[in-house]
Amino acid sequence: MYIVLLGPPGSGKGTQGNLLSQKTSIPHLSTGTLFRDILANPDHELHKDIQVIKEGKLVSDEIVNKVVWDTLKKPEYDKGIIFDGYPRTVAQAEALEKMLESMGKKVDVVIDINVTREVLLERLLGRRSCPICKRIFHISQGLEKCPDCGVPLIKREDDNRETIMERFEEYEEKTAPLQSYFKSGSVNYIEIIVTESSRTASSVKEEIMNKLFELGLVGK
Ligand code: ADP
Ligand code: ZN
Image 1 (tube, protein in one colour):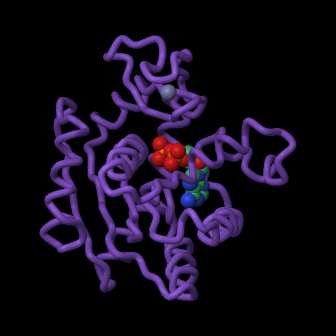
Image 2 (cartoon, helix red, strand yellow; image 1 turned 90 degrees about the vertical axis):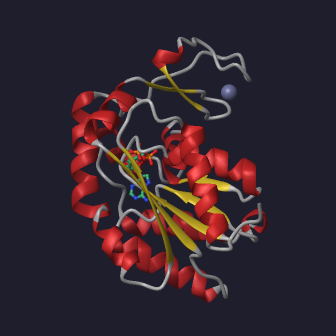
Image 3 (cartoon, helix red, strand yellow; image 1 turned 45 degrees about the horizontal axis):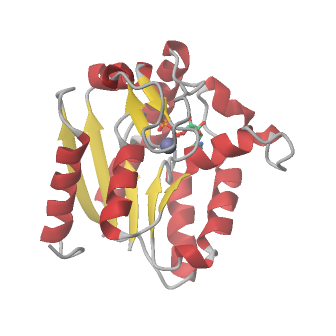
Protein backbone atom coordinates (compact mmCIF):
# COMPACT_ATOMS: atom_id res chain seq x y z
CA MET A 1 0.00 0.00 0.00
CA TYR A 2 1.27 3.47 -0.90
CA ILE A 3 0.32 6.13 1.65
CA VAL A 4 1.01 9.85 1.35
CA LEU A 5 1.19 11.87 4.59
CA LEU A 6 0.31 15.48 3.89
CA GLY A 7 0.54 18.36 6.35
CA PRO A 8 2.53 21.45 7.34
CA PRO A 9 5.89 21.32 9.16
CA GLY A 10 5.26 20.09 12.70
CA SER A 11 1.93 18.46 11.89
CA GLY A 12 3.25 15.08 13.00
CA LYS A 13 3.99 13.39 9.68
CA GLY A 14 7.24 11.94 11.02
CA THR A 15 5.70 10.69 14.25
CA GLN A 16 2.66 9.23 12.50
CA GLY A 17 4.88 7.74 9.82
CA ASN A 18 6.81 5.86 12.50
CA LEU A 19 3.69 4.73 14.36
CA LEU A 20 1.81 3.65 11.23
CA SER A 21 4.87 1.80 10.02
CA GLN A 22 4.99 -0.18 13.28
CA LYS A 23 1.26 -0.96 12.97
CA THR A 24 1.21 -1.93 9.29
CA SER A 25 4.81 -3.09 8.64
CA ILE A 26 4.91 -0.78 5.62
CA PRO A 27 8.26 1.05 5.48
CA HIS A 28 8.29 4.76 6.31
CA LEU A 29 10.17 7.07 3.97
CA SER A 30 10.89 10.62 5.07
CA THR A 31 12.54 12.71 2.35
CA GLY A 32 13.50 15.27 5.04
CA THR A 33 15.42 12.58 6.97
CA LEU A 34 17.03 11.38 3.76
CA PHE A 35 18.18 14.92 2.95
CA ARG A 36 19.47 15.58 6.47
CA ASP A 37 21.62 12.45 6.18
CA ILE A 38 22.99 13.77 2.88
CA LEU A 39 23.62 17.17 4.49
CA ALA A 40 25.73 15.45 7.15
CA ASN A 41 27.82 13.75 4.47
CA PRO A 42 29.96 16.27 2.51
CA ASP A 43 31.11 13.54 0.12
CA HIS A 44 27.60 12.80 -1.12
CA GLU A 45 27.04 13.75 -4.77
CA LEU A 46 23.94 15.78 -3.89
CA HIS A 47 25.51 17.57 -0.91
CA LYS A 48 25.81 20.91 -2.75
CA ASP A 49 22.34 20.75 -4.30
CA ILE A 50 20.43 20.51 -1.06
CA GLN A 51 22.00 23.32 0.98
CA VAL A 52 18.73 25.31 0.53
CA ILE A 53 17.27 23.18 3.32
CA LYS A 54 19.12 25.34 5.83
CA GLU A 55 17.03 28.35 4.80
CA GLY A 56 13.77 26.46 4.92
CA LYS A 57 13.41 26.42 1.12
CA LEU A 58 12.36 23.38 -0.85
CA VAL A 59 14.88 21.22 -2.68
CA SER A 60 14.27 21.25 -6.46
CA ASP A 61 11.60 18.90 -7.81
CA GLU A 62 14.12 17.34 -10.16
CA ILE A 63 16.45 16.24 -7.36
CA VAL A 64 13.68 15.08 -5.04
CA ASN A 65 12.00 13.05 -7.79
CA LYS A 66 15.28 11.40 -8.69
CA VAL A 67 16.00 10.44 -5.08
CA VAL A 68 12.48 9.00 -4.75
CA TRP A 69 12.76 7.09 -8.01
CA ASP A 70 16.03 5.48 -6.86
CA THR A 71 14.33 4.51 -3.62
CA LEU A 72 11.14 3.18 -5.21
CA LYS A 73 13.15 0.64 -7.18
CA LYS A 74 14.70 -0.92 -4.07
CA PRO A 75 13.29 -4.35 -3.22
CA GLU A 76 12.56 -3.39 0.40
CA TYR A 77 9.98 -0.89 -0.88
CA ASP A 78 8.27 -3.39 -3.11
CA LYS A 79 5.12 -3.81 -1.02
CA GLY A 80 4.50 -0.17 -0.28
CA ILE A 81 5.73 3.01 1.32
CA ILE A 82 4.47 5.55 3.82
CA PHE A 83 5.65 8.79 2.22
CA ASP A 84 6.40 11.58 4.68
CA GLY A 85 7.31 14.96 3.19
CA TYR A 86 6.79 13.81 -0.39
CA PRO A 87 5.16 14.89 -2.64
CA ARG A 88 5.44 18.52 -1.60
CA THR A 89 4.51 20.23 -4.87
CA VAL A 90 1.97 19.48 -7.58
CA ALA A 91 4.85 18.65 -9.96
CA GLN A 92 6.15 16.07 -7.44
CA ALA A 93 2.66 14.57 -7.09
CA GLU A 94 2.37 14.20 -10.85
CA ALA A 95 5.83 12.65 -11.00
CA LEU A 96 5.00 10.21 -8.19
CA GLU A 97 1.80 9.10 -9.90
CA LYS A 98 3.71 8.50 -13.13
CA MET A 99 6.51 6.57 -11.40
CA LEU A 100 4.04 4.33 -9.55
CA GLU A 101 1.96 3.83 -12.68
CA SER A 102 5.04 2.65 -14.56
CA MET A 103 5.43 -0.03 -11.87
CA GLY A 104 1.75 -1.02 -12.05
CA LYS A 105 1.06 0.67 -8.71
CA LYS A 106 -0.77 3.74 -7.40
CA VAL A 107 -1.21 6.01 -4.40
CA ASP A 108 -3.80 4.21 -2.25
CA VAL A 109 -4.57 6.88 0.30
CA VAL A 110 -3.65 10.43 1.25
CA ILE A 111 -3.68 11.29 4.97
CA ASP A 112 -3.95 15.04 5.42
CA ILE A 113 -3.05 16.22 8.94
CA ASN A 114 -4.29 19.75 9.65
CA VAL A 115 -2.93 21.49 12.73
CA THR A 116 -3.41 25.10 13.85
CA ARG A 117 -0.44 27.47 13.56
CA GLU A 118 -0.08 28.04 17.31
CA VAL A 119 0.21 24.31 17.97
CA LEU A 120 2.70 23.90 15.10
CA LEU A 121 4.99 26.65 16.31
CA GLU A 122 5.06 25.37 19.89
CA ARG A 123 5.87 21.87 18.68
CA LEU A 124 8.61 22.90 16.26
CA LEU A 125 10.39 25.22 18.68
CA GLY A 126 10.48 22.45 21.29
CA ARG A 127 11.17 19.54 18.98
CA ARG A 128 14.13 17.25 19.68
CA SER A 129 15.08 14.05 17.89
CA CYS A 130 17.34 11.05 18.21
CA PRO A 131 20.17 11.13 15.64
CA ILE A 132 20.25 7.31 15.59
CA CYS A 133 16.67 5.99 15.51
CA LYS A 134 15.16 9.37 14.41
CA ARG A 135 12.39 9.19 17.01
CA ILE A 136 10.86 12.57 17.75
CA PHE A 137 10.44 14.10 21.22
CA HIS A 138 9.46 17.43 22.79
CA ILE A 139 11.39 19.40 25.45
CA SER A 140 8.30 19.21 27.67
CA GLN A 141 9.05 15.50 28.10
CA GLY A 142 12.23 16.51 29.94
CA LEU A 143 14.43 13.91 28.23
CA GLU A 144 18.12 14.56 27.54
CA LYS A 145 18.84 11.25 25.85
CA CYS A 146 16.97 8.83 23.61
CA PRO A 147 15.47 6.16 25.90
CA ASP A 148 16.25 3.48 23.28
CA CYS A 149 19.67 4.54 21.98
CA GLY A 150 21.10 6.40 24.99
CA VAL A 151 22.55 9.21 22.84
CA PRO A 152 21.84 12.93 23.45
CA LEU A 153 18.76 14.28 21.65
CA ILE A 154 19.41 17.01 19.09
CA LYS A 155 17.54 20.07 17.86
CA ARG A 156 17.17 20.39 14.09
CA GLU A 157 19.07 23.29 12.57
CA ASP A 158 15.94 24.42 10.69
CA ASP A 159 13.76 24.46 13.83
CA ASN A 160 14.40 28.13 14.62
CA ARG A 161 11.73 30.83 14.39
CA GLU A 162 12.96 32.47 11.19
CA THR A 163 13.39 29.23 9.23
CA ILE A 164 10.08 27.89 10.55
CA MET A 165 8.28 30.98 9.14
CA GLU A 166 9.96 30.39 5.78
CA ARG A 167 8.88 26.73 5.84
CA PHE A 168 5.28 27.77 6.63
CA GLU A 169 5.36 30.10 3.61
CA GLU A 170 6.77 27.39 1.37
CA TYR A 171 4.03 25.08 2.62
CA GLU A 172 1.20 27.54 1.93
CA GLU A 173 2.48 28.45 -1.49
CA LYS A 174 3.68 25.09 -2.84
CA THR A 175 2.29 22.23 -0.75
CA ALA A 176 -1.20 23.33 0.34
CA PRO A 177 -2.40 23.21 -3.33
CA LEU A 178 -1.90 19.44 -3.11
CA GLN A 179 -5.03 19.24 -0.94
CA SER A 180 -7.32 20.22 -3.79
CA TYR A 181 -5.13 18.34 -6.26
CA PHE A 182 -5.70 15.03 -4.44
CA LYS A 183 -9.31 15.80 -3.44
CA SER A 184 -10.28 16.30 -7.08
CA GLY A 185 -8.62 13.02 -8.06
CA SER A 186 -9.80 9.49 -7.41
CA VAL A 187 -7.53 8.69 -4.47
CA ASN A 188 -8.89 7.88 -0.95
CA TYR A 189 -8.55 10.99 1.21
CA ILE A 190 -8.45 11.05 5.01
CA GLU A 191 -8.59 14.39 6.79
CA ILE A 192 -7.42 14.78 10.38
CA ILE A 193 -7.89 18.03 12.30
CA VAL A 194 -5.81 18.83 15.38
CA THR A 195 -6.63 22.01 17.31
CA GLU A 196 -5.37 21.23 20.82
CA SER A 197 -1.69 21.01 21.76
CA SER A 198 -2.69 18.36 24.32
CA ARG A 199 -3.87 15.99 21.55
CA THR A 200 -1.62 12.93 21.75
CA ALA A 201 0.15 11.27 18.84
CA SER A 202 -1.41 7.96 19.78
CA SER A 203 -4.95 9.38 19.58
CA VAL A 204 -4.17 10.75 16.11
CA LYS A 205 -2.80 7.33 15.15
CA GLU A 206 -6.01 5.67 16.40
CA GLU A 207 -8.14 8.05 14.33
CA ILE A 208 -6.05 7.29 11.25
CA MET A 209 -6.18 3.51 11.84
CA ASN A 210 -9.99 3.65 12.25
CA LYS A 211 -10.39 5.58 9.03
CA LEU A 212 -8.07 3.20 7.17
CA PHE A 213 -10.21 0.35 8.51
CA GLU A 214 -13.45 2.04 7.35
CA LEU A 215 -11.93 2.33 3.88
CA GLY A 216 -11.12 -1.37 3.94
CA LEU A 217 -7.39 -0.69 3.68
CA VAL A 218 -6.35 -2.40 6.94
CA GLY A 219 -7.77 -5.16 9.14
CA LYS A 220 -8.82 -4.68 12.78
P1 ADP B 1 9.22 19.60 7.93
O1 ADP B 1 8.01 18.94 7.36
O2 ADP B 1 9.20 19.66 9.43
O3 ADP B 1 9.54 20.95 7.33
P2 ADP B 1 11.00 17.63 6.65
O4 ADP B 1 11.91 16.81 7.49
O5 ADP B 1 9.87 16.94 5.95
O6 ADP B 1 10.50 18.75 7.64
O7 ADP B 1 11.83 18.44 5.56
C1 ADP B 1 12.93 19.24 5.91
C2 ADP B 1 13.42 20.02 4.69
O8 ADP B 1 13.87 19.12 3.66
C3 ADP B 1 12.36 20.88 4.01
O9 ADP B 1 12.23 22.16 4.63
C4 ADP B 1 12.92 20.96 2.58
O10 ADP B 1 13.95 21.92 2.49
C5 ADP B 1 13.53 19.59 2.36
N1 ADP B 1 12.59 18.64 1.73
C6 ADP B 1 12.10 17.50 2.28
N2 ADP B 1 11.25 16.87 1.44
C7 ADP B 1 11.19 17.64 0.33
C8 ADP B 1 10.47 17.55 -0.89
N3 ADP B 1 9.62 16.54 -1.15
N4 ADP B 1 10.65 18.54 -1.81
C9 ADP B 1 11.48 19.57 -1.58
N5 ADP B 1 12.18 19.72 -0.45
C10 ADP B 1 12.04 18.78 0.50
ZN1 ZN C 1 17.08 6.60 19.43
